[in-house]
Length: 82
Image 1 (cartoon, rainbow, N blue to C red):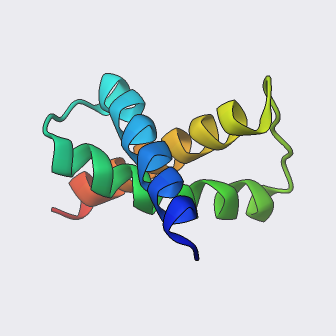
Image 2 (tube, rainbow, N blue to C red; image 1 turned 180 degrees about the vertical axis):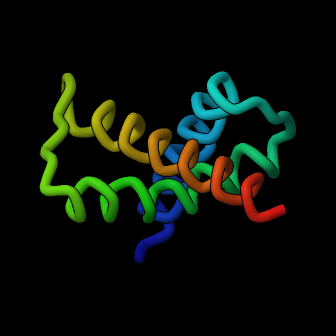
């Protein structure tokens, strides 16, 4: 992964985590970043698992929203376990 791709991935994760925080709560830059980055892996996996396709606007917006969905699931699962 190139440096630019990594930075883009982290920015998308940060935005996705921030959006997810409106649904499940939470605060802090590190919390947003971690939940968003993990959500960037979990979101597409969950959509593929259920056979759903999701596309809104352009690819960037779709990736942010799918990552936010994954971040919401990750935070809710973490709270359920804890």
